[in-house]
Picture 1 (cartoon, one colour):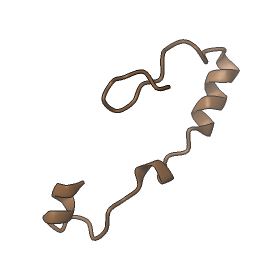
Picture 2 (tube, rainbow, N blue to C red):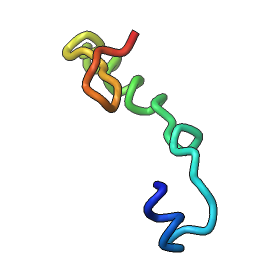
Picture 3 (cartoon, rainbow, N blue to C red):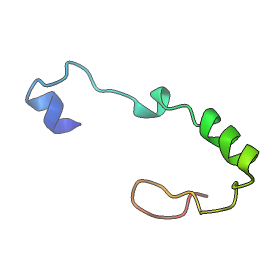
Picture 4 (cartoon, helix red, strand yellow):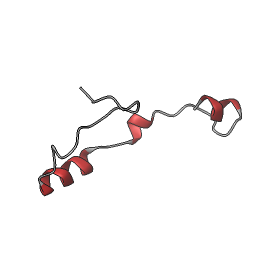
Length: 49
């Protein structure tokens, strides 16, 4: 993100967490019975607490 700001590709920093709503994914996984099919991970690959 710093690169994009420094090179004026974007005007302001963006909070991606505010844009991403996991509710549809969670609902689909629950409907398919796949809630525990894989371990949710953070961006650096560590399991999410």
